[in-house]
Length: 113
Image 1 (cartoon, rainbow, N blue to C red):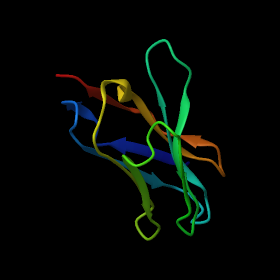
Image 2: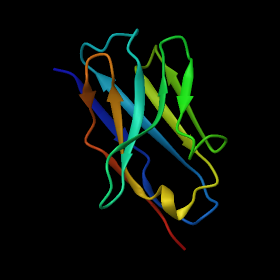
Image 3: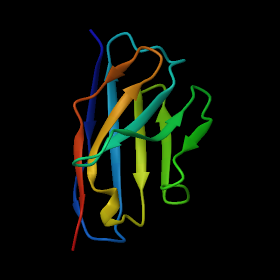
């Protein structure tokens, strides 16, 4: 049974930073493409960032230059460093294993003064 467990969400002021973590357990292939999606209230879930097994990353235009995705294959963990956060970044953030199509349960990020 594969599990993806996110952590690191919370309440932060505009301009602040958060680091999300996604710990994978079970039969996760170290070749898996991993990524983060987010879903704001009343909006569709959208892809934020993805990363291949060798570290090639892609980002949504809305977060380029502010967010950074990384992974530690030895620890089966994926990270999302979020800087200069804006109120429009408020959403539930989900970790995803694209290769096996597994999802985490989500972690809430709220950007508000």
